[in-house]
Length: 130
Image 1 (tube, one colour):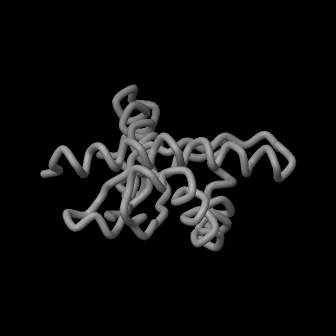
Image 2 (cartoon, one colour):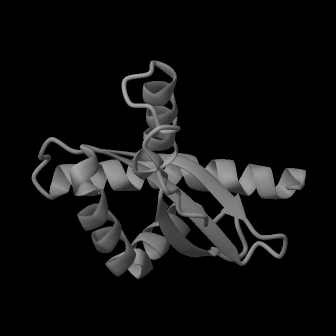
């Protein structure tokens, strides 16, 4: 269970990181790519932040995750410059793709009986636990 401090820091990181990523996309050429920071989880000791990203189109998700992870130190530095008066220390950032929209879409598709996963078990979506 997150305490109020964790929630506050997570909210600040989520808001500022979204701005940083938007700027970096525009600087990189502004191709048709949408990245949103869907959730940030902070550990109790405030040293690690798990950042969940949603990417549209989905086909670009792996490439975006690879690029963001490779540039994690630069992103962390930029965030620390923005939030230097709010945090004593910037948490380490670990990025993940948020697959909850695809998971929900699969459930909705099954409920509409377009594909019946009870009859064909291969249709069941294997969600990665993180």
